[in-house]
Image 1: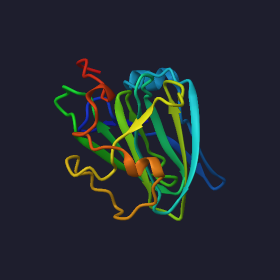
Image 2 (image 1 turned 90 degrees about the vertical axis):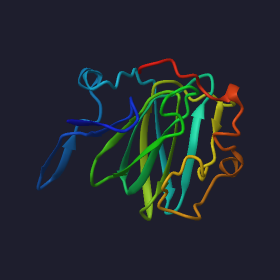
Image 3 (image 1 turned 135 degrees about the vertical axis):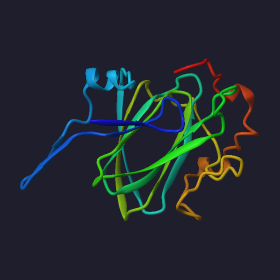
Image 4 (image 1 turned 30 degrees about the vertical axis):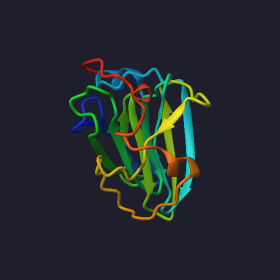
Length: 187
């Protein structure tokens, strides 16, 4: 596998090895020793799978007291996936990185705990799969506005389909300080 650092420390783009032949393909999507050596530590405790249609934007989400690192990938379809550093005091707080993930390119993105995450669907449908380093905790989820002008995320959609909660999250600058993780130094 190939692992590429992004402009955000701790966020990695991964290209797993894919073995193809006339029957199809096989790929290893997670192997603890190999991924740990690539600075993607786990442990992962929960897997999630979502299905969305063209134009759906999910995010920007994170958990307050139970932050989740996420290893995300698209099994079918195509999305624009985004990680945002929201750690108060971080030199890259408010910066983002994004990547096209698809069932065709097999790429994965690792987003560490204390980063916000979101994606929008570019294909007719998308099957999105991700591993989490902590459990989903109802009532602990929080988020930021997907279109926060201070973040300047270059989303490839202008009028996405949003969940009601995603319409009402604050901008990073308006988020209560106690709802933002504190930068603790190097990842």
